[in-house]
Length: 169
Image (cartoon, rainbow, N blue to C red; front, side):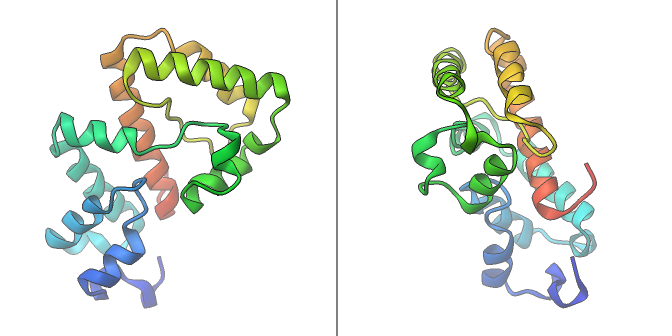
């Protein structure tokens, strides 16, 4: 974050416009961060911590809505255009737009099984991973306990937010 873009110098609308997409389709987190801001908002690490705290305090219902706002990985149709810019860029960076037909079929099958079992999409911070690593993680996590996956998904959502803010992970 640069001095010109210091979060504490933004009005509420500009703050939400700048940080409302950090958590997928959930500007309520940026709104709450603005409303309860303090001295920790002018660096990426402080803002990431504040936003994480808001999510952790939000309760299960809002957390589940946040998880459900995430796109499924390697969804060929959504990768073509119907997805948040950051998600599309992240997935393309991991090569998910270059899956073979067999890989797309495996992602579709496992994404469906994961969502049916847990009630939300499989979420993983794809930065630094390739499509084979992501598929392996999905295969490993699909059979996990839902409570453990809920926690794992929230942790991954926080990791994605930190990456989007440019904070150390």
